[in-house]
Length: 303
Figure 1 (cartoon, rainbow, N blue to C red):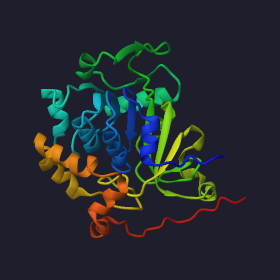
Figure 2: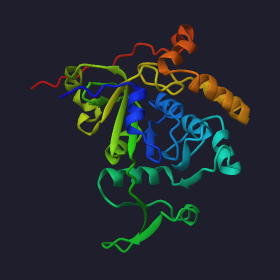
Figure 3: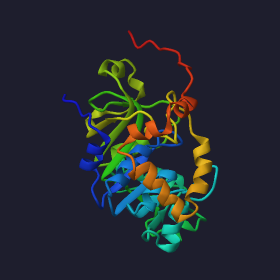
């Protein structure tokens, strides 16, 4: 098979179009800030941004005017507080009004599961006693044809493109993740196009030698971007740690519109890509976040 490796600018330029429904997934780690920054740099517009827990990267995309609607289950600066860019957009229409569509965590998971399974909806036991069905008319209820019990349902979610950050991938797009998992696999299989962003490009023999770590197969992948440190200030287990100070500082930076605009001008629009971003942070800063060496035990796949 031919190589799917391309630059972040190429991948975003080719596979993210104005008006698309886009998901950048990852849970606590492997959140691809580099992709979000490239979307901002290319001035993509009218996106429907989906994610279980939109945090700082979607705050930045909203503040840059890229997003017209947010589909989510929880939004905030984890461990710190509000997303001020999102609040300004929803409450004041700055820089534009953003529509919100809210679910529970498992409600969003179920939407991706339905989309990945090519089903029109998924049923679940939550939402009884919740206010969400009154606010979100996409949450409906049915009776089980076997037991007569009432269940909530959510519609399938099939994004136009999923951008998934992983630790390593081969040039065909076979992507491996270890550590904390989110809904990367479900989001990838539910989406029409998949862009993999990897910390490291490895030969296919490395992937085949450890097949259980391959969460996303290359057969559903359109592009592979090799971008070290692409998840900062999030982390990539085994590569670098979470930059907790950044999340705390973001509350101060983003609280006022001027502070947000200054950050975007300096750290996103003012840079050509992640290589310049790493250079601007500096070697000493990167070294501070570097992961220590704790290899896992090996297994025998032979017979």
